[in-house]
Image 1 (cartoon, rainbow, N blue to C red):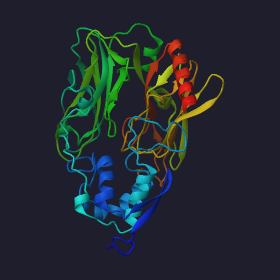
Image 2: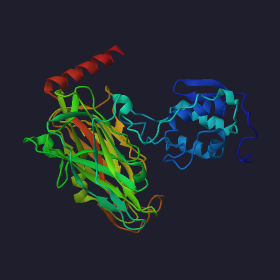
Image 3: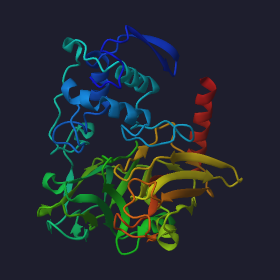
Image 4: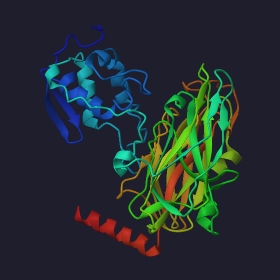
Length: 438
């Protein structure tokens, strides 16, 4: 046993844990009884054989050598990857995978006690994990995607520069359809070389200020993406995205070489509302700040920089999610609302951005920001181009906007639902009523 640890397994006959409800007592904390359930629920999605994590954490024998590292990572809230500042802004999300204060305290106490195994009979029932060749949203919709669109294959050489493959594929739709969910996935053999895959839609639109606001010159309207940490998009009741007859999908696949030649392909899975159904609201996607970043991003060598972008809301709206995007020098990003009366509200702040995890923070039904027309959304991005940034390949370089990982950028992917004035006021009244009943 590592001599730097507490002397022996079973060091604690009982443990006092300080959690959100105050102090509470636990009997001796063991891997089998206390730690394995936490890992199974929060970590095994990635930390199992064949997955993206560098080590499996399925068994006691696999976990025990990593115990001090696990303690360090969970105490720093680096793992599981949920990088929101928990002291400011909205804290209720549909997909929150962060550990509770109690879970972190239990893991820390277990490591400090020498990481005892306990009785193997206390282990939770093993999960029968599905194959990775599945659509993760299929369980929610109880069916495979209604439409799958595949990019034309690209062969990435064993050595060489990053490549961007941007094929345009016909959807084959002969009538307008409304989308209730989407998921992007590289094929299994593609995943080692796929850095990310952005998907745009090209279709004829009626003149509409909202549509014009989300159009990306030369590509179309941003639709969705694949990045490590993002599963897909699920749209709320009575909302959806519109795909029109004759529309096209423009893929923007970013590939990098990994030492062997690999032929890669990206798939877009789409679940439709039932035929003929028209939801009340159309969801629009925006990359907030991207145009300002292209014009203004300037990161001198050896500096920590701050950049701002401002995006006005021309109508009352509900924000559905917040997904910050930067590259390897990205340090933090916040999204604030500046109301027409001058009041400023912090919505979400990622204070520990990690380029390896592009987490999509999906607001809960009751926490999604409801904002009046005339609100200004303010994006603030911090980049660290110093030697203190462990991910920085060269702090002596001057860095500007660019698509390569060694270049940088900043924007926030946000799905926006524009509301009628009547619904806007009704949601505000309902929320105030709920607060009054608590």
